[in-house]
Length: 77
Image (spheres, rainbow, N blue to C red):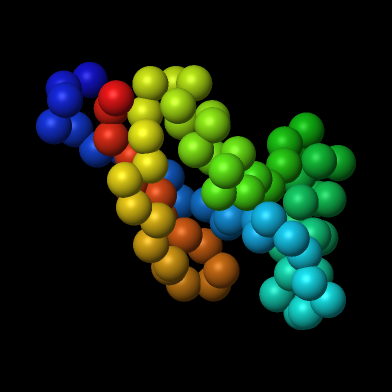
C-alpha cells in the first residue's frame, strides 16, 4: 500500500467505561449480538488503535458519523 494511501474504517466505538444510558445500552446489545451471531465484538478506541498498529496502520483521526458510527481514518506506519 502506498505511503500516501488512507484506509477508512466505519465502525461503532465502545466507550472505555459504560454508563447507564440508552446509547450505551444499545452498544452493549450490539456487542452481544455480534458475539453470539458472528463471533465478533465491538471495540474501544484503544482496542482499535492496537489492532491497527498490529496491522501496520495508525489511526490519524476519528470522526463521528450518523447513527452512532464513527469513521476511523487510518494511515500506513
